[in-house]
Image 1: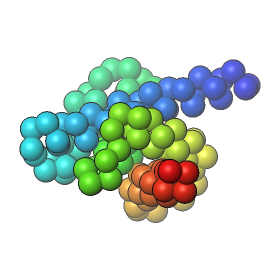
Image 2: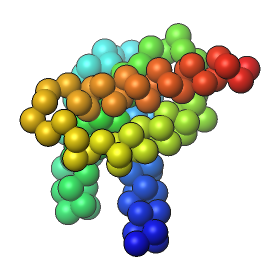
Image 3: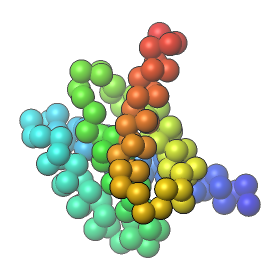
Length: 124
């Protein structure tokens, strides 16, 4: 059971990192809106067969929301590691909660970014 939980968390972490960082980098590199960037990443990533098979679409949506954070936060690749760890843990804990309520994925993305930024401010 513990091995399965570790595998699930690792899968969530990698997926969250790739989707959020790709969304952020796409918006920054091509000077496009973060909304368009999130749409493109979500569309492309959710088209991948392994994402559909593993039923990770909601996680990708959540991660792309997190990737829409402001460049003024100066996160960088390591910042997204922290955000992805928090986000994947929140997703694992809350994915079966608040069923049918709108805004759950955006709230998890916001909490991931906000908690990381607050923790970074406390320890820097």
